[in-house]
Image 1 (cartoon, each protein chain N blue to C red):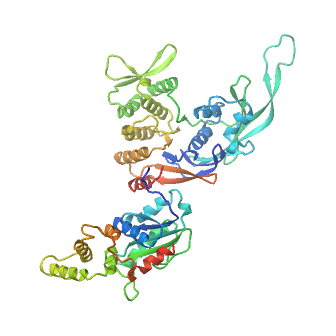
Image 2 (image 1 turned 120 degrees about the vertical axis):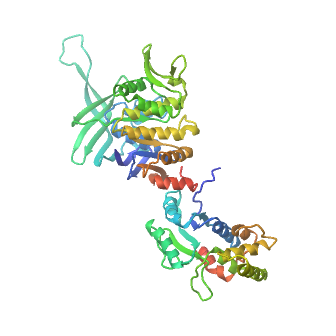
Image 3 (image 1 turned 120 degrees about the horizontal axis):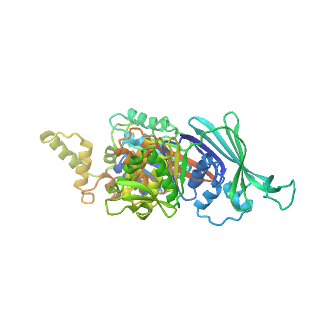
Length: 206
Length: 356
């Protein structure tokens, strides 16, 4: 059987990279959502070409909704603009705001990780930040102490959020050696955490 | 160069529009999506003055018995076998609009010579009534040709030209998916290439697949022409015994070299070729196409062929090549052409998308 990428559902989530892909796969399973297909569009610069090519695949005409999900990185406004440019240049609907659909054929929404902060403002950052926000486990405090010690005495950490996430996973017997996406499968992230609500609702509304 | 095409009611195609054909165009899509119909429509556009064109296309599809009634002879040319649907093949060739319309005209009367009679008579013809495949070819301004293809009583076909303007035929060649190399035709082509001292160009392409070939010759033996190659052995070797793939490739390259500023259509280009040589075959075809300014339109089912075509383009260091892949999709009886330029095709292959 061919393992080539095909459009098999009429609701799509296009995500940046393998970790995000597996994170969304397990999120959908956790939320019992079965009618949505997740696709990895590679790196952010590839989004325009991915959509352009996707439009030529079988069944694109049957697609009713597309969510684009990627990291906000250091500038969520620039990240959103980058996505909307890729959509516009492919002749698709362009949402005005994050986590909200723009009507069209298909309708389109954009989600940026990690999403909103406690005050309801969009945060810069990435999927690791979002995952860390879902952890409800005292072990994370020990991890933070350890990283603080490393940062001050040994090595200036350049990707603190990644170090924190992997340090946490490495001290949990259930998740040791796992990447972010694999850890999602083993239940590392609390799918009912408040920080995940806008993501869950956007997917449920697709 | 054929720039674009719009086909209506031709064989498996109710309507198909392709906005841009490239110098090198590969056509793909599932079975029964209209690939062969598209190739035949394009071929018919250029071979419209060949009365055997319809029967040749039928034979190349493996049909070897055709009753001579119009509903069997002409109906397969029309979409849904419906003789009342007029066929239109609209095209842009070198920027100029050309249109071929095909329909069946019923009960057309025609005088046919019946040969010398055994007594003095002024009557030496008889009147035949037939259903005729009527072709009308026009450009932007006016109808430049009107002709009819007649089925003769001996089972052959003839072309009755009512009106034509002076024109220079565009050299084209058509290779069906089932076609076995025609040694006589190939020999004639090789002869014409030899006259122009271009045999080395053919040899270069063939050597990319069979490096041992040092020369290529058309030899006539017992009323049949055959192409022989020198493989450095005691005797020359007939190409037709080197395998279907090699033989077919040679036929294609010979056709390209004799269709300068024309078009070669190749249905299922990968037929007979081992995957390991496909990249070199494509490189050879691209080089020959450039050398002889010949447009290539080829169909394929093969993902390996598409991958190899992209790899070949990279290795040829073709910067923004005039190359496209058109994937035909049949939906609700209509055929759509999804166009991939080189960058898109390369990206789709790298991303492992299903584009066959």
